Image (cartoon, rainbow, N blue to C red; front, top):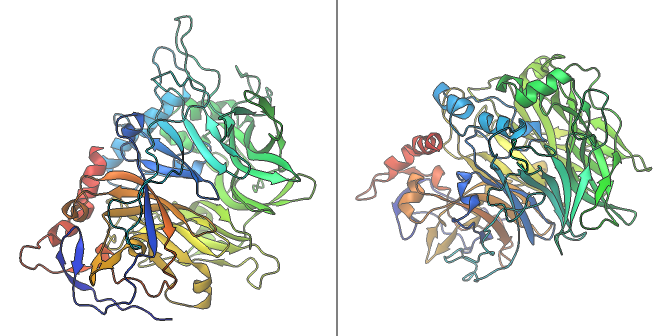
Length: 608
């Protein structure tokens, strides 16, 4: 296969963003991926999200999309109260920045407590807004090039109401959609109860969190009840504490929702310290022991409340203390489920660290839990438990390849990185139980890489540090992330060209000149069997704004394979703008803006 050559030293000329230089011309001038934009309406609650807008679920056919908009200051984007890997890691930036996140106005900790405490006199306004949209394209691509105006979906212009009243402009419930199965016709997730003050004595609500199933055709709403328990304390709601729908699957002609349910308090002290304590007690959250659960919604109708049953026995732990234990499903194929299970690997008080796990069908409707073996750190593995906060599995394809991640709690090369792995769980494979790290320490020790999804062709999407983001993160500044595509089969074959940034795959050439669309594509969360990729990022109105990273507009994107481009080794010669070694030339002095880009980003980040 032909390999395009690229020279690094380029001068800049903009119209709109053109990198003109002397380089070997490639035959391919069209983009490998075509961009569809999924815009958000600015004049509504979603605009309050401080640009923290992410995709949480996509249907297999790519026609439905759901996401969240977070309206509190935070050091992370993928917040999920049911998933500790999304919020219980420490802030590693400068003290002043961390204080803003911990204690500042509209900070995560302040918001988190307000959400979970019993409200007495103050109406809670939701800080986790969910949305659900389906594809309705307007516009066409011009000759396979990402030339504005790009095709767009319908504008997303309101939050998703499940248990809240759509006429309530205060939208007091926090909502999340975790999975969409358009073939079966359902979206599932969780919602909180709305606050009410019916008798004027103070605000109350019925429950903290309930799983739901939402039928796509008519918006019928099914409540997924947690199990009843009262052995460890008094609950106002005797049907249990919280539940969440995580995946929709079909088994023997039945439509099932796999999720989690609270089954007990971890203990009453831990529950109280999580729900009303200080941020130092987040390792006790959610305050409940939660177990993998399954609900049969085949014959359910609008307004039904469905009881489920336990899916697995136990956790990956061998002993336990005061911290909650949990099983959480993140991905599934027709045979196995994958996710995370608690393991008491640190100590009995602040343990409960998550470990990547598989859940195998026993053939009788129950599943057997196994911790994924052979996950190791880069260094002294005798210190694994001290160095690692969580490992977790995000997705599995039909070939039983599992993608997941490891998060360090200790500093590695002035960073607490996340590192992505692939685990082969196919017993018939020559690589059975092999764990590989395709992006570990690339391009430098302590670099971040995170896998989010894999399709049956072995194509993986996720995000990593952007090119040039080499500054220390611990007590330093945040590193900008960039979305990527990785071909795992190429990696196994030893082909050095096995990963590409999404910005690289969406550029094109016009009259022999490379053109980069004014998008920074940051977090690629989903890929389907057609190779369509869903991601979020920013759009910029001008090349100057793009280079300097200012005045961005948050966008959600669907990247569609260009049917006329078949050879990924024959791309348009458009380098990542962050890769380029810029030279000052005439009036093109914006190289200084590039040098200041990390600083500009941090300033925007703090002010938010």
